Amino acid sequence: MKLLYYINRLFLRLRGYSGPDLSRGPLSDLVRDTAVSALLEYTGESCLEVGVGEGLLAEAVRDRKAFRRFYGVDISTWNLYLSKNRFAEDLFFAGVCALAHRLPFRSGNVERVVCINTLYNQRTWEEVRAIILELGRVTSENGSFLFDIRNARDPLITTIYRLSRIIDPSTRKLEIHAYPYRRVRKMLEENGYCVRRRRAVYYPFWFIPSAYVIEAQKTA
Image (cartoon, rainbow, N blue to C red; front, top):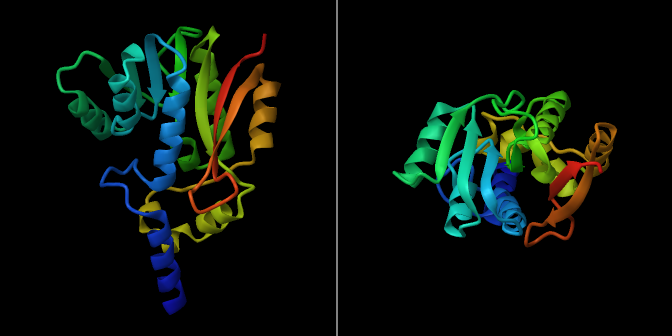
């Protein structure tokens, strides 16, 4: 038990503290920053985030004035409440309560779609696959969608996730899973999509990518 205690303390010290929001965390924040950088390469009328959480990404995008309108989807009404409060009376943000794999948007109707820090909490690969394909469904022909995966080829991630319920109390409510990039790329290609860009996300003290932010689009 003492060994587990010291492992827990070491992990929390290395991971650091990012704030009280459930969606925050050193790796989650790095993933979000990477996704924001990718989104800022574009400008447009609207952007859709699936799994908006407390609205942290939406706020970062709003502050940089990349899009005029931002739609945030979440199954949690509490998260949508927190997101809306972050923007007060600002008409930039609109919240929608819906399931990630059953989005209430017409096919090919959104130019930029993003889903971060969400897929690794899904219970099965089938759920992850369904969500990714739903992102692609609502994305326009000339648009692209972004999502992240935790890297199953990273021994640090696989070890931490295997012991997560012991060393990180915050994961006891949500399952956490990592996936190999090749599996995701193959699934996309089998369903008519291609990877436009893959961005590696590293812990500052680690040399192997712990996550990837993937930008995909319909195959030409």
